[in-house]
Image (tube, rainbow, N blue to C red):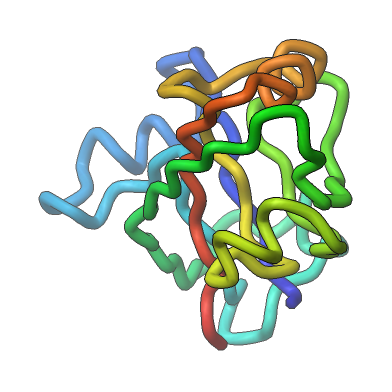
Length: 145
């Protein structure tokens, strides 16, 4: 889907997003975990990042996470993941044969893993944590456009 996932926000109080959030109505702020679905009414794409417009209108979807508990033992999860080296979440690219396909069919390609065993982890730690025999995985589904 053509969306942008808000993985982090600037720590600078002068950042545009923080100035907006300071004046936003309750629940209308932009948060980590939100999806940006439209910019100025158009479906979003990576081409919108760094737009030169002084004022833009964003459409945001906030999706409540869900949690799956898995007892996997030594079996494989069967997930192919897309992630960045500095990110704290991963997108499921595909679900192959393994524990997830057999025991958690609600997990599908496009879902995003936010936490493993209660922690948002950097990539290397996340991959290592997912090898544990017992897992608690927090995910979000992709937004609907």
